[in-house]
Image (cartoon, rainbow, N blue to C red):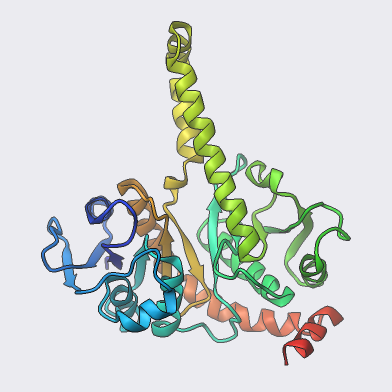
Length: 339
């Protein structure tokens, strides 16, 4: 049976036409996108659920979700909570997506905080950066749980058996970092994850680990720096090739390799990121997503359903959290401070 994916047609910076074009492209692969947006949208033959409101990128997330229950974003999330769709995709306001999903889907038992898991196009193959923006502030036990969620993602979606895990810090030595990374390192080292210590941001695209864990503030900065660097380098390479006759001839010779490199490094290849830890599959696409990126984000959501990612998280996260709670004094101290 085809996977039904609720798609926020008004999400993103490029307008609904690009979102719909991406949904049409995804439909050709066997997925069933269900659009949520104004009744007068040209859905190009796809199912359309009419909505009367829209949440902008600059709106305050919690306030917007409460005041606009019939927005395309909220209605799409609600469809998953009511089992009218199996996954949701939006390129809209990330904070509003998190707020709407917490309201309609809720967290899985045992999950402290949901986290954004982004596939990184490393040279050695894709890896996972988690958290990439859901939690600007985090505790060491949050990072421990993010690592477990990232490992399950790597196993189920990327097909990596027994994924390696590293902690993003300012140096590889265990004694380097702020208080958060020092305590998180201790928890991760005592866990049953395949933890291989700290890594630095310069190694992310080299394949530092199958899973790289950090707080959402650090992860979002690292992610945007990587994406900006990749786009800038590729753009500069194209401009250099066409700037001279010799460059154009050389460009013809390396065209195949250059296209392969572009496809591997292009953020549109995956199209979006999972918001893990919720009772449903949620994929957040880039605000500037192209039709190709939207299609790939919908495909990513469908794979999450097909691989039973939510069920796998529900099976494994509570036990992991219980085990981690008794591993080190650092964890017990942070729990006492929280109380």
